[in-house]
Image 1 (tube, rainbow over the protein chains, first blue to last red):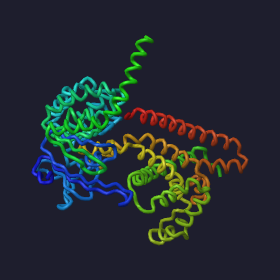
Image 2 (image 1 turned 45 degrees about the vertical axis):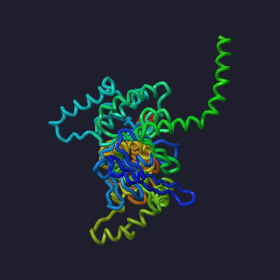
Image 3 (image 1 turned 90 degrees about the vertical axis):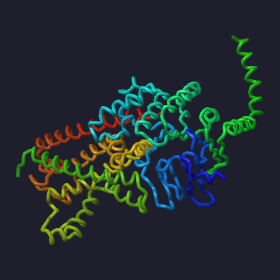
Image 4 (image 1 turned 30 degrees about the vertical axis):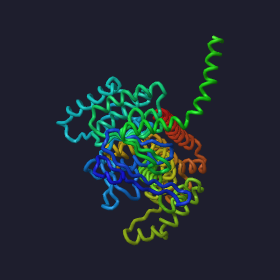
Length: 268
Length: 229
């Protein structure tokens, strides 16, 4: 059913095998979407990162086809395999991978072509705009080890957007942040990305990310796509089902926690 | 025959300097190859490159004699075809110094390249940099301190080379006699004043190199700690 929808904006069909048939891992995923936010959801080791690395050209699949709009990035039948630098994919790594020896401004400018000096002013303007939009313009001269996790994330996103990509990949963008910051960054990210007219593929194993971002939800399980949800109703239905599975544990946990609270209040 | 104390120092610096330039280029090329590529026989080749580091210098000298000596495989061909003689020349001394110092540069370069996180290089690729750009702007700037520290030690090792150089280049005062050989000669001849000066010169030169390389290594650790996470 889903395979028939290949006229869509982003098309991903990837097969790759590692090791022997008995003990190795195999990735076989197919999905396509026209939505702005595609969320890949599933446990660690289910092949999500491998999929997006194939999209970015950092991993070469054995077979398949990857296309963004009309641009074919990889097609094993047609022997198309663009190099990462020709794919125009913005990739935000899980721990951001900001270059430690370059200032934040140099990090952001890294992906911008500086061949024509008459465009320098234009470039400076664009860097400034992006930094302002993500509220990191005051940090331009700092180095990655001098800033916080939330700021690093913004710089990594700014760096990916500055290279003018056709698609943005976010690999567990919030996993390196603390709980309070996560919630704030989610809201900020939705707002910031809303201003860029490019599709986003996000990897996560946090249901809250699914709830906030997913327009197309691709559910992974051991190298396969288990389910694809597109409608809001289907996505929230899936999340409710997921909650229901964990509910018995939750109830058990809330009671002792409540008792502890009372104890603390008495002690205080 | 009396040669001033300056001549052996100049010969030593010339030989060690030239050898270090060659070792740096060869060691870095081997380092990046071994750090980033998989190929059959990799471990055996690694052992072969590292062997001169653990061999007694006389063994290295002997192998070099077999290779570039007047009747050696390469030496004979070079002499008969181009009239080039490597044995008992400064070039021979440089070759001996390269043989013992390449493993040092190679080991430190490989470790430094391997320590560069692959995500940094991948990030540069997705940002549109070709492979040479990735190497020059990411890999090299993140590893040069470790490579430089290794190169300093390789330079010091080349300066102190004795056994292999003696066998390949001989001990010709004013031509191939380096500091370490001049000291040996002075002691043998009972010229204690000359030996004292030569030893002092060597101590200062080697001390300076070791101190600088340690300082660089410390800064390399600091920069690695200041990275991501």
